[in-house]
Length: 232
Image 1 (tube, one colour):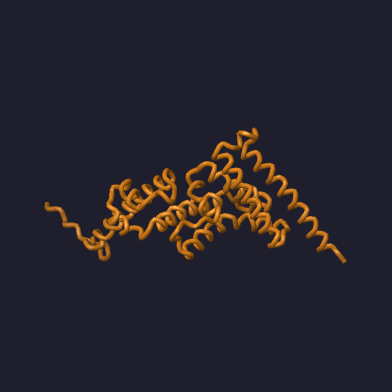
Image 2: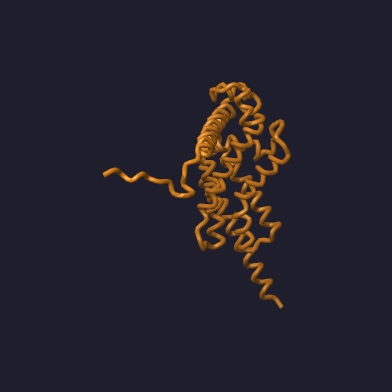
């Protein structure tokens, strides 16, 4: 008895053109990632200014001309790397926020997640210092600069929201988030370079001390807000 020929169900027939397109897209994604990894290594080893497109292309195994088909400039490469890094930072902060948490717990969890991300990924800290310090690489477009800064603000937004829920006005919350951000970056830099050892201190412990003071200040805001609500 002959086997019954298998027939393609409507809508499930393989389309050779679509299959080729998917393979091409996958190949482009792999090559693009290879270029990004080469750029990351070059930036971290040589610095932004000395890492040339030619050097990045050499590390990726391509010609400079071939690299331009994936990224139009060195600055675009930097922007793509930093955007990916900030995306992972945002995911880390978001994952750390416990469901149904009090504003205090959300504040502490978000701040610790921000600090822990860069402590655990010092190369991302190196990459981010252009953005943190406001030093724009030559050629970084205003649009890209704004987009990258917006992603950084996204990671800090849970901190500001928690502070406002604790009773801070928007202006006070912004000031406290700015101070906390500066404190975290300073601790990370001292820890990353080893300079913290001259003081005999641990960055994580100093962060916890700062957060304890911040929570104490937040308690005063709650008291003031409660007194205002209970006033005549």
